[in-house]
Length: 148
Image (cartoon, rainbow, N blue to C red):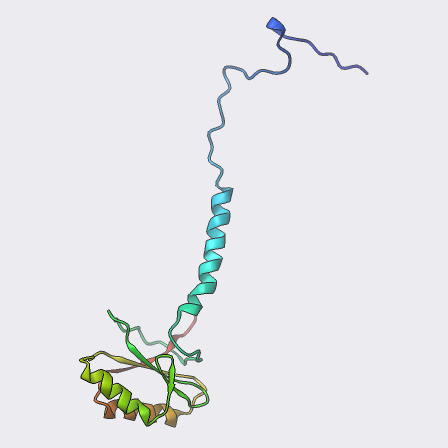
């Protein structure tokens, strides 16, 4: 079986684009989708790492979040009963002196208390009493929302 080739006018061989056919002007969105999926995964992995302080398992509740314009003071009680002011471990007796020093600088914001779900209720209450003794009455308890 043989294949025949013919040349068109002017000695030009092969196929030519017809003058009637138009260029394909579609945008290929596949690279855009790939980039967006990679960014989504990066932000999903990075978001939990941005949480403040010591990792604790917070209790689940239906409570609504409190608005805050500045970064609040955070006190954390972990499951072993250790107390952290922001990210620094402090003793239970040292909390009053540190909070009193902060209060002398004119800091009159809400203090957020994060207690691990497995921590002892009494240790969280002792920290609350010490915060109150330091002169802070605006105290918020941090919880995680119940997933539905």
